[in-house]
Amino acid sequence: MNIYKGVGLFASGVLFGSAGFKLLSSKDAKKAYTHATAAALRVKESVMETVTSVQENAADILASAKEINEQRAKAEEAASVECSEA
Image (cartoon, rainbow, N blue to C red; front, top):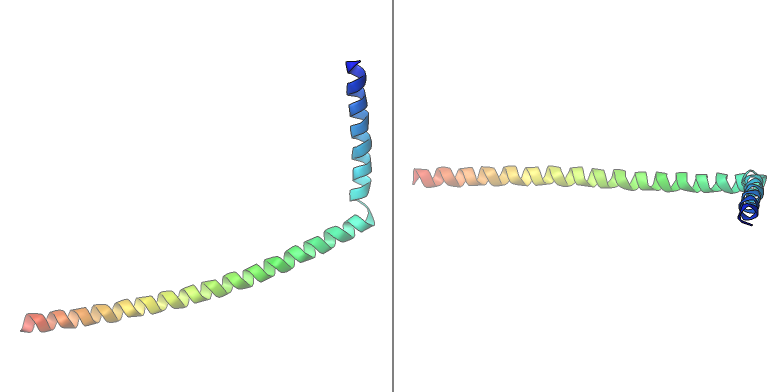
């Protein structure tokens, strides 16, 4: 009885596999794959635009922070010089 169950499962697997392969390779399925891929490419493009914008903003923030630190260092140095002169 066990051998018939195994053979039956194998045969049904082959049958469903063949039907699934035909279904996945149909024109309608290929059209769906194409649309899904196009949507994924649009999402990728949108994400890349957002990443570029964030990178540009981060670069601006970094430059401003460095400038603030340079001004602060100059002010501290000037205050240090004034204290030592006094």
